[in-house]
Length: 274
Image (cartoon, rainbow, N blue to C red):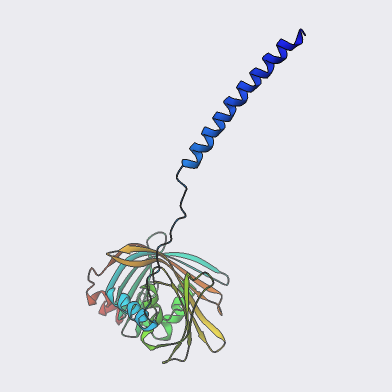
């Protein structure tokens, strides 16, 4: 009998605590349920591709929009028993002319290379003269470790697809997540197979592979696109030559587009020519 009051008091206390916890829990659930739910991030809608011919027309128009280019570049060339970086200035005028001045880390001129009208000239500072023909390839191999055909690469450095007007589409398909449009083409002029990858959201080229027969000639990657004067320009270009186990990585800075470049920029002093 003496314990009964104590038990009653204990039961009343527990009942009060239970009611308090129940009210607090109800309020917590109500508050949480009223919070706005996080919505999934919406992806930017893909631009409509009306046809491959219209896409190629847009790519061609984009390439033609870059009439000239001035930039500083850092070029890293890697190959078998060769790994070197260069500081360079790059001047390009459409698909007509290109000039590359190469400097050592001490700002000494290692060479001046000019491509103009399908002709390549190179100033060799060691011999203090201008060379042409096969000697250009030999000198490039000695200085840079590679021999480059600038007829193709002049478009590549501008972010364009070489010989685009000669390409005929064979197959076009999306990758598994439909973020990249993969296009297989044939160069009607050379017979080479050219595989192109286009970003589905920007419609900009991200890679290119040129194949002759069963052999891969070279592969290109465009990356780090940034706006320059309202034009998207790839500030990183990677060229890989599988057969020679060589790679060229070009990183652009201080890019200027369509500022005008006089044609005498692509001429070397007549005294050196002699």
